[in-house]
Amino acid sequence: METSRFLLPGQVAVITGASSGIGRAIAQVFSGAGATVVLAARGAHRLFKVADELKGMGMNTIAVPTDVTVPSQLDALIRTTLVEAGRIDILVNVAGGTPPTAALAVSDDEMMEAFRFNVLSAFHLSRAVAPHMARVGGGSIVNISTALSHRVESGFVAYGTTKAALNHMTRLLAREWAPKIRVNAIAAGATRTEALEMFLNVEGVEQEMVSRTPMGRLGEPEDMALAALYLAAPASSWVTGQVLEVDGGAPGSVWPLPIPSGLE
Image (cartoon, rainbow, N blue to C red; front, side, top):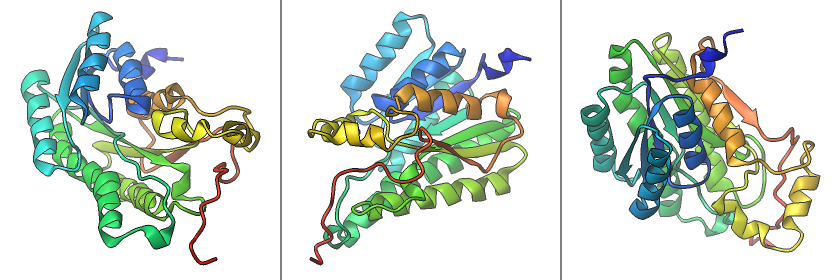
């Protein structure tokens, strides 16, 4: 078996949301696999801290502060990558998220912002990198989605709806860009990130979520990073248009906190 097919020597990977959580873990794993990683996130201080950590371990790293909701900054990210790294082989769209909110409390503007953050940013970057990937012989795009894109739970209409759109966009782009560019997604289960930690601090929440997960623990950012490595690497060269569920085997939502609908 060729374990080298899980390595990324000489490849350049653009990773959004790379200053923490899943994005940071993907940057670490991809760097360890031999890729030059281009880190993008809004918070410049934290972003450069991650870059310095990787550089301190001898990794090839470029940090580009980027707000993915601003198209001009996305274009600047791609320009900077091509100037400094010369090519783009992999794109991982991690940045996204929408806090749990009852549907009646979600305004039209908030729903549009959720689409801008969770779908449009990934589409804009995917459209921008595709021609460059095709010119270097192909590439891989990995979108980080969520289990709530196909499961139902109160309070997640904006988040779940937009991530469901991301899933289908993944399939549509995969069909249109095959065989040169593979496009896949990861439907992440409950993962121990900063976004989740604030809820895990509520008494009993973590225990309840773990009890609903057959694997008996929450996901870690590294779990998602290793799945992303598989989808980005030559090991998955016959895989495209797929939404890989990485959720500890949970058959349904593990969210334990009630969010009143407002119709009571």
